[in-house]
Length: 348
Image 1 (cartoon, helix red, strand yellow):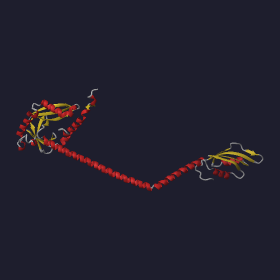
Image 2: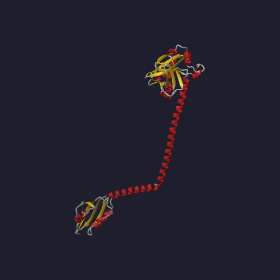
Image 3: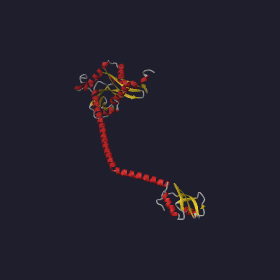
Image 4: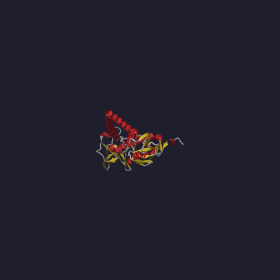
Protein backbone atom coordinates (compact mmCIF):
# COMPACT_ATOMS: atom_id res chain seq x y z
CA UNK A 1 0.00 0.00 0.00
CA UNK A 2 1.42 3.41 -0.98
CA UNK A 3 1.85 6.19 1.56
CA UNK A 4 -0.61 8.34 -0.38
CA UNK A 5 -3.41 5.76 -0.24
CA UNK A 6 -3.05 5.60 3.54
CA UNK A 7 -4.51 9.11 3.75
CA UNK A 8 -7.49 8.40 1.48
CA UNK A 9 -10.94 7.97 3.06
CA UNK A 10 -13.96 7.58 0.77
CA UNK A 11 -11.95 9.19 -2.03
CA UNK A 12 -10.97 12.24 0.11
CA UNK A 13 -7.35 13.05 0.86
CA UNK A 14 -7.43 13.58 4.64
CA UNK A 15 -4.19 15.60 4.49
CA UNK A 16 -6.15 18.46 2.88
CA UNK A 17 -9.31 18.20 4.95
CA UNK A 18 -8.52 21.45 6.79
CA UNK A 19 -7.98 23.35 3.55
CA UNK A 20 -11.19 21.93 2.13
CA UNK A 21 -13.10 22.96 5.24
CA UNK A 22 -11.76 26.53 5.00
CA UNK A 23 -12.48 26.57 1.26
CA UNK A 24 -16.08 25.50 1.86
CA UNK A 25 -16.65 28.32 4.34
CA UNK A 26 -14.96 30.83 2.02
CA UNK A 27 -17.21 29.63 -0.79
CA UNK A 28 -20.31 29.99 1.39
CA UNK A 29 -19.44 33.46 2.72
CA UNK A 30 -17.60 35.22 -0.10
CA UNK A 31 -18.37 33.47 -3.38
CA UNK A 32 -20.14 35.73 -5.91
CA UNK A 33 -22.82 33.04 -6.32
CA UNK A 34 -23.33 32.51 -2.58
CA UNK A 35 -26.99 32.89 -1.54
CA UNK A 36 -25.79 34.78 1.54
CA UNK A 37 -23.87 37.26 -0.59
CA UNK A 38 -26.84 37.75 -2.89
CA UNK A 39 -28.90 38.63 0.19
CA UNK A 40 -26.41 40.95 1.93
CA UNK A 41 -24.33 42.37 -0.92
CA UNK A 42 -24.41 46.07 -1.69
CA UNK A 43 -26.53 47.01 -4.77
CA UNK A 44 -24.48 48.20 -7.75
CA UNK A 45 -25.62 50.32 -10.68
CA UNK A 46 -24.10 48.83 -13.85
CA UNK A 47 -23.47 51.35 -16.62
CA UNK A 48 -23.45 49.81 -20.10
CA UNK A 49 -24.16 51.14 -23.62
CA UNK A 50 -27.79 49.95 -23.72
CA UNK A 51 -28.64 51.49 -20.35
CA UNK A 52 -28.06 51.28 -16.60
CA UNK A 53 -29.34 48.42 -14.45
CA UNK A 54 -29.12 47.63 -10.73
CA UNK A 55 -27.57 44.32 -9.64
CA UNK A 56 -27.31 42.80 -6.16
CA UNK A 57 -25.11 39.76 -5.64
CA UNK A 58 -24.77 39.30 -9.40
CA UNK A 59 -28.57 39.13 -9.87
CA UNK A 60 -30.66 41.91 -11.45
CA UNK A 61 -32.75 43.91 -8.98
CA UNK A 62 -32.28 45.36 -5.53
CA UNK A 63 -32.54 48.58 -3.58
CA UNK A 64 -31.34 51.92 -4.96
CA UNK A 65 -27.60 51.59 -5.58
CA UNK A 66 -24.89 53.74 -4.02
CA UNK A 67 -22.06 52.09 -5.99
CA UNK A 68 -21.39 52.03 -9.72
CA UNK A 69 -19.78 49.62 -12.17
CA UNK A 70 -18.73 50.06 -15.78
CA UNK A 71 -19.17 47.25 -18.35
CA UNK A 72 -15.85 46.67 -20.12
CA UNK A 73 -16.05 46.29 -23.92
CA UNK A 74 -15.59 42.74 -25.16
CA UNK A 75 -12.49 43.63 -27.19
CA UNK A 76 -10.59 44.65 -24.03
CA UNK A 77 -11.08 41.34 -22.17
CA UNK A 78 -9.99 37.77 -22.78
CA UNK A 79 -12.60 35.23 -21.62
CA UNK A 80 -11.81 31.58 -20.97
CA UNK A 81 -14.10 28.81 -19.65
CA UNK A 82 -12.52 26.54 -17.05
CA UNK A 83 -13.24 23.03 -15.84
CA UNK A 84 -11.53 22.25 -12.53
CA UNK A 85 -11.64 18.92 -10.66
CA UNK A 86 -13.49 19.08 -7.37
CA UNK A 87 -10.45 17.55 -5.67
CA UNK A 88 -8.49 20.72 -6.52
CA UNK A 89 -11.08 23.09 -5.04
CA UNK A 90 -9.05 23.55 -1.86
CA UNK A 91 -6.20 24.91 -4.03
CA UNK A 92 -8.50 27.03 -6.20
CA UNK A 93 -6.60 30.36 -5.82
CA UNK A 94 -3.36 28.70 -6.93
CA UNK A 95 -5.12 26.95 -9.83
CA UNK A 96 -6.62 30.26 -11.03
CA UNK A 97 -3.27 32.04 -10.83
CA UNK A 98 -1.73 29.24 -12.87
CA UNK A 99 -4.48 29.54 -15.49
CA UNK A 100 -4.03 33.32 -15.62
CA UNK A 101 -0.28 33.03 -16.03
CA UNK A 102 -0.73 30.45 -18.78
CA UNK A 103 -3.42 32.32 -20.69
CA UNK A 104 -2.55 36.01 -20.24
CA UNK A 105 -0.77 37.77 -23.11
CA UNK A 106 0.13 40.62 -20.73
CA UNK A 107 2.97 40.97 -18.27
CA UNK A 108 2.20 39.80 -14.71
CA UNK A 109 2.30 43.41 -13.42
CA UNK A 110 -0.18 44.51 -16.10
CA UNK A 111 -2.60 41.58 -15.72
CA UNK A 112 -5.95 41.84 -13.92
CA UNK A 113 -8.52 39.09 -13.82
CA UNK A 114 -11.77 37.91 -12.30
CA UNK A 115 -13.73 34.69 -12.26
CA UNK A 116 -17.20 33.33 -11.44
CA UNK A 117 -18.34 29.79 -10.83
CA UNK A 118 -21.01 28.79 -13.35
CA UNK A 119 -21.84 25.28 -12.15
CA UNK A 120 -20.54 22.01 -10.75
CA UNK A 121 -21.25 18.31 -10.68
CA UNK A 122 -19.97 15.38 -8.65
CA UNK A 123 -16.48 15.52 -10.12
CA UNK A 124 -15.83 18.95 -11.68
CA UNK A 125 -16.34 22.64 -11.05
CA UNK A 126 -17.11 24.89 -14.02
CA UNK A 127 -16.09 28.55 -14.05
CA UNK A 128 -15.47 31.41 -16.44
CA UNK A 129 -12.27 33.47 -16.27
CA UNK A 130 -11.88 37.03 -17.56
CA UNK A 131 -8.37 38.51 -18.15
CA UNK A 132 -7.53 42.10 -19.11
CA UNK A 133 -4.66 44.62 -19.20
CA UNK A 134 -4.58 46.95 -16.21
CA UNK A 135 -3.22 49.82 -18.35
CA UNK A 136 -5.84 49.37 -21.08
CA UNK A 137 -8.68 49.16 -18.56
CA UNK A 138 -7.36 52.23 -16.72
CA UNK A 139 -7.15 54.27 -19.93
CA UNK A 140 -10.66 53.23 -20.96
CA UNK A 141 -12.00 53.92 -17.48
CA UNK A 142 -10.58 57.46 -17.46
CA UNK A 143 -12.41 58.14 -20.67
CA UNK A 144 -15.69 56.95 -19.13
CA UNK A 145 -15.44 58.63 -15.77
CA UNK A 146 -15.27 62.42 -15.81
CA UNK A 147 -15.42 62.99 -12.06
CA UNK A 148 -12.34 64.65 -10.53
CA UNK A 149 -12.29 61.96 -7.82
CA UNK A 150 -11.66 59.28 -10.48
CA UNK A 151 -9.55 61.21 -12.95
CA UNK A 152 -6.33 59.61 -11.77
CA UNK A 153 -6.75 55.80 -11.52
CA UNK A 154 -3.38 55.43 -9.78
CA UNK A 155 -3.98 58.01 -7.03
CA UNK A 156 -7.71 57.52 -6.49
CA UNK A 157 -8.10 53.79 -6.65
CA UNK A 158 -10.61 53.75 -3.78
CA UNK A 159 -12.95 56.11 -5.68
CA UNK A 160 -12.92 54.17 -8.93
CA UNK A 161 -16.11 52.41 -10.08
CA UNK A 162 -16.06 48.67 -10.47
CA UNK A 163 -15.19 47.12 -13.82
CA UNK A 164 -17.34 44.21 -14.97
CA UNK A 165 -16.96 41.91 -17.95
CA UNK A 166 -19.77 40.14 -19.78
CA UNK A 167 -18.19 36.67 -20.01
CA UNK A 168 -20.48 34.49 -22.14
CA UNK A 169 -23.58 35.87 -20.44
CA UNK A 170 -22.06 35.83 -16.96
CA UNK A 171 -20.98 39.07 -15.29
CA UNK A 172 -17.43 38.88 -13.92
CA UNK A 173 -15.86 41.52 -11.67
CA UNK A 174 -12.24 42.42 -12.47
CA UNK A 175 -10.15 42.69 -9.33
CA UNK A 176 -8.10 45.79 -8.59
CA UNK A 177 -10.51 48.64 -9.28
CA UNK A 178 -13.53 49.81 -7.25
CA UNK A 179 -14.77 46.47 -5.90
CA UNK A 180 -12.98 47.06 -2.59
CA UNK A 181 -15.75 49.39 -1.40
CA UNK A 182 -18.42 46.76 -2.03
CA UNK A 183 -16.33 44.02 -0.46
CA UNK A 184 -15.74 46.15 2.62
CA UNK A 185 -19.44 47.02 2.90
CA UNK A 186 -20.34 43.33 2.56
CA UNK A 187 -17.87 42.31 5.25
CA UNK A 188 -19.22 44.94 7.64
CA UNK A 189 -22.79 43.86 6.94
CA UNK A 190 -21.79 40.20 7.34
CA UNK A 191 -20.17 40.96 10.70
CA UNK A 192 -23.21 42.97 11.76
CA UNK A 193 -25.60 40.17 10.81
CA UNK A 194 -23.34 37.62 12.49
CA UNK A 195 -23.30 39.66 15.69
CA UNK A 196 -27.08 40.01 15.53
CA UNK A 197 -27.41 36.25 15.06
CA UNK A 198 -25.02 35.66 17.95
CA UNK A 199 -27.03 38.09 20.08
CA UNK A 200 -30.26 36.27 19.24
CA UNK A 201 -28.59 32.95 20.07
CA UNK A 202 -27.33 34.32 23.39
CA UNK A 203 -30.79 35.70 24.11
CA UNK A 204 -32.33 32.30 23.42
CA UNK A 205 -29.74 30.64 25.65
CA UNK A 206 -30.39 33.24 28.36
CA UNK A 207 -34.15 32.71 28.16
CA UNK A 208 -33.66 28.95 28.29
CA UNK A 209 -31.33 29.34 31.28
CA UNK A 210 -33.81 31.58 33.11
CA UNK A 211 -36.60 29.13 32.39
CA UNK A 212 -34.46 26.25 33.64
CA UNK A 213 -33.57 28.22 36.80
CA UNK A 214 -37.25 29.04 37.40
CA UNK A 215 -38.23 25.41 36.91
CA UNK A 216 -35.39 24.33 39.22
CA UNK A 217 -36.60 26.74 41.92
CA UNK A 218 -40.17 25.51 41.44
CA UNK A 219 -38.99 21.91 41.69
CA UNK A 220 -37.11 22.73 44.90
CA UNK A 221 -40.28 24.30 46.36
CA UNK A 222 -42.29 21.22 45.43
CA UNK A 223 -39.67 18.97 47.03
CA UNK A 224 -39.80 21.03 50.22
CA UNK A 225 -43.59 20.90 50.19
CA UNK A 226 -43.45 17.15 49.69
CA UNK A 227 -41.07 16.82 52.63
CA UNK A 228 -43.42 18.90 54.83
CA UNK A 229 -46.43 16.81 53.83
CA UNK A 230 -44.47 13.62 54.45
CA UNK A 231 -43.51 14.89 57.93
CA UNK A 232 -47.10 15.84 58.76
CA UNK A 233 -48.51 12.53 57.55
CA UNK A 234 -45.79 10.41 59.19
CA UNK A 235 -48.08 9.40 62.17
CA UNK A 236 -50.92 8.50 59.81
CA UNK A 237 -48.55 6.47 57.63
CA UNK A 238 -47.17 4.70 60.69
CA UNK A 239 -50.71 3.97 61.89
CA UNK A 240 -51.67 2.66 58.48
CA UNK A 241 -48.63 0.39 58.49
CA UNK A 242 -49.58 -0.83 61.97
CA UNK A 243 -53.13 -1.57 60.80
CA UNK A 244 -51.78 -3.36 57.78
CA UNK A 245 -49.53 -5.52 59.96
CA UNK A 246 -52.46 -6.21 62.31
CA UNK A 247 -54.64 -7.24 59.35
CA UNK A 248 -51.87 -9.55 58.22
CA UNK A 249 -51.68 -11.12 61.67
CA UNK A 250 -55.47 -11.50 61.83
CA UNK A 251 -55.52 -13.12 58.40
CA UNK A 252 -52.74 -15.49 59.52
CA UNK A 253 -54.65 -16.27 62.73
CA UNK A 254 -57.85 -16.96 60.79
CA UNK A 255 -55.92 -19.26 58.49
CA UNK A 256 -54.55 -21.11 61.51
CA UNK A 257 -58.05 -21.36 62.98
CA UNK A 258 -59.28 -22.75 59.69
CA UNK A 259 -56.54 -25.33 59.68
CA UNK A 260 -56.63 -26.06 63.41
CA UNK A 261 -60.11 -25.38 64.89
CA UNK A 262 -60.48 -24.76 68.63
CA UNK A 263 -60.85 -28.15 70.41
CA UNK A 264 -62.60 -26.54 73.37
CA UNK A 265 -65.40 -25.40 71.11
CA UNK A 266 -65.88 -28.94 69.81
CA UNK A 267 -65.88 -30.33 73.35
CA UNK A 268 -68.61 -27.86 74.28
CA UNK A 269 -70.54 -28.87 71.14
CA UNK A 270 -70.32 -32.58 72.03
CA UNK A 271 -71.36 -31.84 75.64
CA UNK A 272 -74.48 -30.05 74.37
CA UNK A 273 -75.34 -32.81 71.89
CA UNK A 274 -74.90 -35.82 74.21
CA UNK A 275 -77.07 -36.48 77.27
CA UNK A 276 -75.97 -37.67 80.68
CA UNK A 277 -76.23 -41.37 79.72
CA UNK A 278 -73.29 -40.96 77.36
CA UNK A 279 -69.77 -40.31 78.38
CA UNK A 280 -66.66 -39.86 76.32
CA UNK A 281 -63.56 -41.61 77.52
CA UNK A 282 -61.19 -40.42 74.72
CA UNK A 283 -61.17 -37.25 72.54
CA UNK A 284 -58.54 -36.32 69.94
CA UNK A 285 -58.52 -33.67 67.24
CA UNK A 286 -56.24 -33.09 64.25
CA UNK A 287 -57.30 -30.27 61.98
CA UNK A 288 -60.94 -30.87 61.10
CA UNK A 289 -60.80 -34.53 62.06
CA UNK A 290 -62.19 -35.65 65.46
CA UNK A 291 -61.95 -39.10 67.06
CA UNK A 292 -63.99 -39.98 70.14
CA UNK A 293 -64.33 -43.18 72.11
CA UNK A 294 -66.95 -43.69 74.78
CA UNK A 295 -69.85 -45.69 76.17
CA UNK A 296 -73.61 -45.28 75.96
CA UNK A 297 -76.78 -47.29 76.44
CA UNK A 298 -77.58 -46.86 72.72
CA UNK A 299 -74.40 -46.20 70.74
CA UNK A 300 -76.25 -46.26 67.43
CA UNK A 301 -78.47 -43.41 68.59
CA UNK A 302 -75.36 -41.45 69.55
CA UNK A 303 -73.92 -41.96 66.07
CA UNK A 304 -77.21 -40.92 64.46
CA UNK A 305 -77.46 -37.80 66.61
CA UNK A 306 -73.96 -36.73 65.68
CA UNK A 307 -74.53 -37.50 61.98
CA UNK A 308 -77.59 -35.19 61.95
CA UNK A 309 -75.57 -32.30 63.39
CA UNK A 310 -75.00 -29.58 60.70
CA UNK A 311 -71.52 -28.82 62.09
CA UNK A 312 -70.32 -32.32 61.18
CA UNK A 313 -69.96 -33.27 57.52
CA UNK A 314 -69.52 -36.96 58.20
CA UNK A 315 -69.61 -39.41 61.11
CA UNK A 316 -68.17 -42.92 60.64
CA UNK A 317 -67.37 -45.88 62.92
CA UNK A 318 -63.89 -47.30 62.23
CA UNK A 319 -64.79 -50.32 64.43
CA UNK A 320 -68.01 -52.11 65.38
CA UNK A 321 -70.09 -51.16 68.36
CA UNK A 322 -69.53 -53.70 71.14
CA UNK A 323 -71.38 -54.49 74.38
CA UNK A 324 -69.49 -53.99 77.64
CA UNK A 325 -70.06 -57.18 79.69
CA UNK A 326 -73.35 -57.26 81.60
CA UNK A 327 -73.37 -53.51 82.24
CA UNK A 328 -76.00 -52.77 79.59
CA UNK A 329 -73.62 -50.27 77.96
CA UNK A 330 -72.16 -50.24 74.46
CA UNK A 331 -68.71 -49.05 73.52
CA UNK A 332 -68.28 -46.91 70.35
CA UNK A 333 -65.41 -45.48 68.32
CA UNK A 334 -66.39 -42.63 65.99
CA UNK A 335 -64.47 -40.52 63.42
CA UNK A 336 -66.04 -37.09 62.81
CA UNK A 337 -65.22 -34.63 60.03
CA UNK A 338 -66.09 -31.00 60.64
CA UNK A 339 -67.71 -28.67 58.15
CA UNK A 340 -65.71 -25.63 56.94
CA UNK A 341 -65.15 -23.68 60.13
CA UNK A 342 -63.52 -20.53 58.65
CA UNK A 343 -66.67 -18.41 59.03
CA UNK A 344 -67.75 -19.73 62.42
CA UNK A 345 -67.44 -17.18 65.16
CA UNK A 346 -68.95 -18.82 68.22
CA UNK A 347 -69.80 -22.20 69.61
CA UNK A 348 -73.40 -23.44 69.50
